[in-house]
Image (cartoon, rainbow, N blue to C red):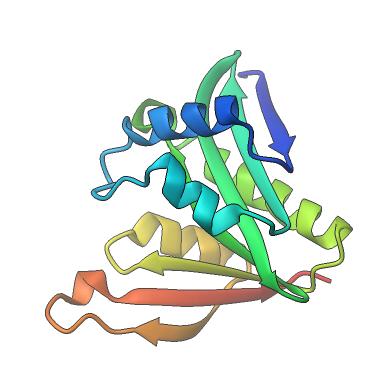
Length: 153
């Protein structure tokens, strides 16, 4: 069994941001990368949590969420490096994020994912998320964005 640790951050430091950006460059599914300015624009002055997960001290993934409206917490972006997948790390981050959101007074979690990420969709449904909306892509069904919600209170 591996030693797994999750670190929670409620402020986005320059060091943490650079660590996240570096990690995203190792994730093959991320076809569009966000700049430091993109993260700051999205997350500035909002309740947020940035989690990192380590296995045996080695950075294996992250998850970022924030809120723009009362009671709703949006689980925005996350990834596990390919060499650390199938170990339950994404589920561990999601469960930890839900706990943090619940502890901080949020009632509902929202996640968005694409049809092409079947494993993510399956994990979300297994964790009790329900499809609440769809943003259709005009050309490619795999690029349809699914919106899922879960009551956490």
